[in-house]
Amino acid sequence: MTRALLVTGTSSSAGKSLFVTALCRYFTKKGIRVAPFKAQNMSLQSFVCKDGSEIGLAQALQAFACKIEPESSFNPILLKPEGNAKCQVILKGRLYKSLSAKDYYKEKKLLWEEVRTVLEDLCKRFELLICEGAGSPAEINLLKVDLVNILPALHLKCPIILIADIDKGGVFASIYGTVKLLEHYLPNYVKLFKGFVINKFRGDLEILKPGIRDISQLTGLECLGVLPYLDDIYISDEDGFSFFGKITKRMHAKGELRIAVLPLRHISNFADIDPLYLEEDVEILFSFRKEDLISSDLIIIPGSKNTISDLKWLKSIGLIEVLKEAIKKGAEVLGICGGYQMLGEVLKNPLGIEGHDREIQGMGLLEGETLFSPEKITSQVLARPLSQGVLGSEKERLWGYEIHKGITLSPKNLFEIWRYSTGEILLDGQRKGPVWGTYIHGLFTNDAFRRSYLNYLRERKGLKPLPIIENYWKRLDRNIEKLSQKLEEYIDMKRIEKILDL
Image 1 (cartoon, rainbow, N blue to C red):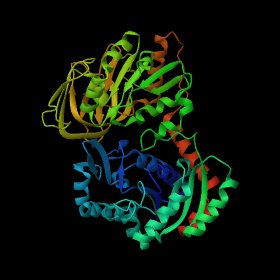
Image 2: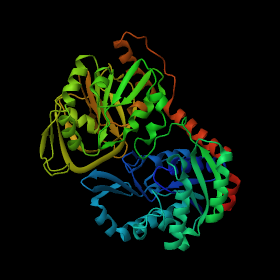
Image 3: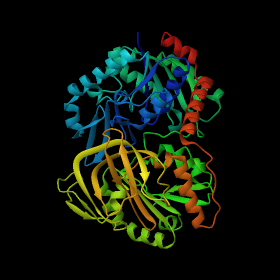
Image 4: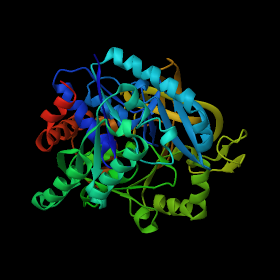
C-alpha cells in the first residue's frame, strides 16, 4: 500500500520545498521507492524533463533527491506568471492556456481530475509520496478552489506536517491562526495534521521551549523539531530571490572576476547562475547600477517571462547605453533565452504573444531577429560548439535545456544542438565580438565549459587560468545529502516514521 505525507506551511517561503527535498533523500536512503509531488506550483524557476515536459525546478531537485528521473507527474500543474494578471498554465508538462485567476478557478473540476489521475498512477508506481503544499492552506478566500493543499490530502487521507518560519516573526500566532481557521472551516482536513516544525531558527532553544509547550497545548499538535537557519546549503529556491538571500557571504565575496546579473522585473530560470557560485574566483551581484555594470567582467541578461516588457523597461532606464559603455571598458555580455532575444536587432510579435506591441527594436548588440509564435519549445539538448574558440571545442558535448516561445534567426550560430524530445538537429546562438547569446539554459552546469569560459575572462585580465575544482552535479548531491543530515539531527524522524506507519 502506498503511503503519503503532505508538507504544508503557515506561509510562502516557510521552507516546504527544502523540507520535502530532505525527506525525499532520507526515505530514499532507507530503501523506500519515494517520489515527490506538488499538485500545483507557481514559479518562474522551471526544469525540462527528458520527454520535453516542463515542471517546477523544486520538483526536479526533489526527484534528484529521490535518485530518480524528473517527470511531469511530480508537478502536474505549473503556473508561470506572465504579467497583465495572467498565468501561463502548464498541465502535465505541456502548455495548456494563459488564464486569469478567475478563469483558472472556473476550470477547477477539470484540473482536479487531471491531478487525481496523476496521483492514482503515482500510487501504483511508488511506495511513498512526499507531497508539498503551496503558500498557506488557511487562505479562507481560496478554500473552495484549493487544488494543492486540501484536495490531495483529503483524497489520499494522508497525515500533514505544518512548517512555520520563525525568521519572519510571529511564528506562534501563525501556527495558532492556521490551525484555528482550519478547525472552523475544514474540521475534517485539520484532523489530518500530526505535528509542526519550526524552521529558520537562530536563537537560544531554551528560550523558545515555553512557547513550543504552550502552542502544542493550544493546538493539540506536537512539535516534531526545530530546524536552524541553514545558510550554507546552496539549493535553488522556487520563490525567486530568497535563494540568493541565503548566500550573501558569497555574493559579496572579493572575487577576481565580477559577474553582474540584471534582476529583470519578469526574471525567470535564473538558476542558470547557480553553478557560478561554486567558483571561488567569482563575485556575483544582481544590479542595474551603472557603477556595478561598467566594472564587471561579464554581464548576464537572464531569461524573462515577458521579454518585450522587460526590454522596454531596460530602454526606459538607459541600460542599453550603459551596456555599450561597459563593453568599451572590457565587459562581455551574455543573454540567455529572453536575454538573447533582447540583444538582437528586432523582436516581432504579430500575434500578440508578448503583449500589445507587434514589433520592437532590440538592443542591436547582436544581429538577426526574433519572431514570437504560440508554439512553446521545451526540450533537453546536447550542444556542440561549431568552432574552436572562446566557447569551447567542436569535440565537446554540452548538456542543457530550452524553454521558449519564439525563434531567433541569425546569420551565424554558435552551437549545433540535438533535441532529446524530438531528435531534431538545429542551430542555436550567436556571438559578435564580446557579446553572445543562446537559448540553452544550464550551460554553466557543464564543468569544463564553465571553467574554460571563466579562464578566458581571467586571461583577458592578465590572470592565470585555474583548474576545475567542482563538479556541479556532485556538489548538488552533497548539498542534498547535507540537508538530509540536518533533518536527522534536528527533526524527530522516528516520530515521522511512526506517523507514516513505516
